Amino acid sequence: MELRTAVLGGGVMGGTLVAAIVASGSRNVVVIEKNADRAAELEDAYGVGVGAELELLSGADQILLAVKPQDMPGLLPQIAPHVGSGAIVISLAAGVTTKTI
Image (cartoon, rainbow, N blue to C red; front, side, top):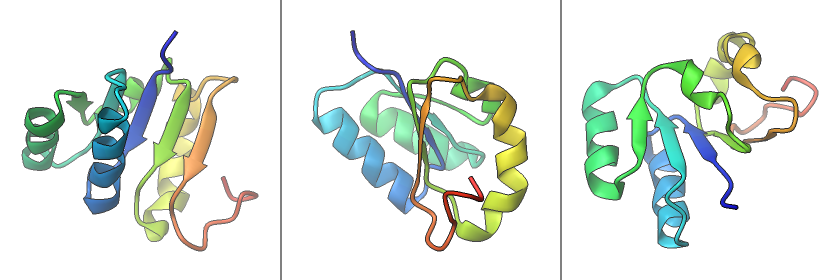
């Protein structure tokens, strides 16, 4: 069974992660990106699901947080209700400690 991966943030880092995940053969990927133009680019380029709704995190086996470090404090409480108890959460935000997450 293929893991469901959610990438939160579709900027340069998030887009690079999506490209690598898709190149590895995985298609069970969703990207949460608030910029509609960028979301459309990612959907067209990689054929993955995209949207701005945090509910897209629900059911993800692994969640990759590819957002700016300064956005993390406000974002973490918003995503918490959508993160399953067994989900693996990986942050790429420099300087954000595991304790904070």
